[in-house]
Image (cartoon, rainbow, N blue to C red; front, top):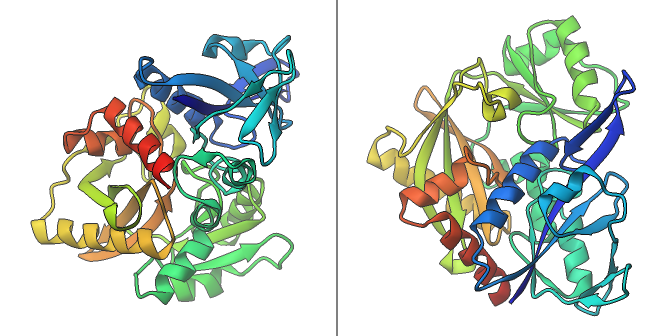
Length: 353
């Protein structure tokens, strides 16, 4: 069976004009993407799968690689060109065709889990692991996700939206509705990128500017003192099932990018979460219901806040991290599903659709 794993790279010059290599492509979550891809690739059984590696540059080129070591220098690498409607890519070096049975998109954020690659796979007539175009586009947008969940009586943290170009709202007006402490975050970024805590007008102005560096849509939320609970969903349709519940104990005031991925992070992942059985059952029920409402397939990690016995659904991540410290594979390992069996299950699910 022929599988294509997709990851991405960006090469750029920073403000000091020093040459830097940062993995993960156009998305602000590039480092997470490359770490996840390495782990997934290492876990795949090469007696069952013929794997082609591909990464996408910051300018959108899909390049064929033999190993992850090649991403440090892209000179001489051949581009992969999608041939729409033909189930294939052309190797622009020798003009040969590569016909994958399925695309495994280990991509996070913009142009990866937002429906873009999923739409390309559909036009190519190639199966792809995970959610489709619509659910990917909906779930990456925290504002649309909240609106759909609230419409279906699933509680989320109170919020307002701000679109680039609109007048800056006053902190006083927002605080009357949302409380004295707010969090401002890009609507379509993950991994806590661009998130700021706000307590006055000056901080609000800075936070909106920072968040708009990553997205034209920004979410402004009430700050709540809460436990962070997460659950994995695996499968499609009526066969979708939920894992047990895990808890994140961040080493910072909130779960920042550094708290999640820094080598010096003291954040902890607790599996299973120390909660009552009836609460775990409620989280499982709501997660599966949200998964169906949002049209998810294949996999998702559903994140909750628990504050003073009130349960809020925070977000639905359609391509959760697969790094060494990521919650999603750990949740399934606790259920007896090994890392490599998890990857095979996802591939088989994609092929069955």
